[in-house]
Length: 259
Image 1: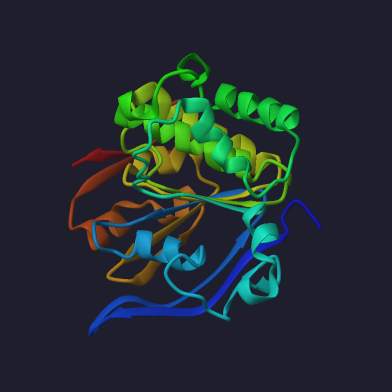
Image 2 (image 1 turned 180 degrees about the vertical axis):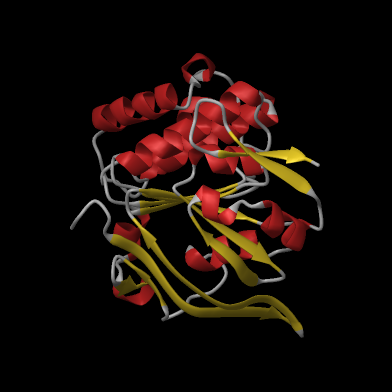
């Protein structure tokens, strides 16, 4: 299986709630080795698309993971290849941080020593080693977000070619941790993962994405490299907001300014 192997194939995905169309005939192929970012205004369908692609809210035969439908996968084997960081993770038990991260190891069947090594590695990657003995409920929103990211990365740690879905992973993070989290996403893609991220910040999307998909009212509006998808015309059409796009002074990426 190549570095750019097809990780997810979704054909003609539509979704309604009552009479309201949430997603309308979406077709996507998502590959290993890429960070794909979903952009769009509130209510565009980004999180719903992520939930459909992860089979959280429905099971479609026309969504395939590495060529197989969900029904063709052993659920434990799929859990080792598909990790999801939801927008909100609820956990009320007074676990310490290490115990929360170790929950990601439940599908893996590893020895305690091996699991301990992996969780330490993932806590190091997400910058939470200093929190290891803190009780989870005592953490800030941003700290909790990074703990759950370490948990998800532990879950999929046994495969280079895997699918990692991150729904607004930077929403509670400060500037430094926003960039560290998305840099980590980029590193995981470079190692062979297919990373799908929901973001609101167009400049973060431009800096860290290989591919940008823009949604509005459940329909695909743009799909391409950052320079192709993040344009002043697209932003005005989708967000109803005038912007200026300039080239970053040191990186070959677009930078969005308010007009």
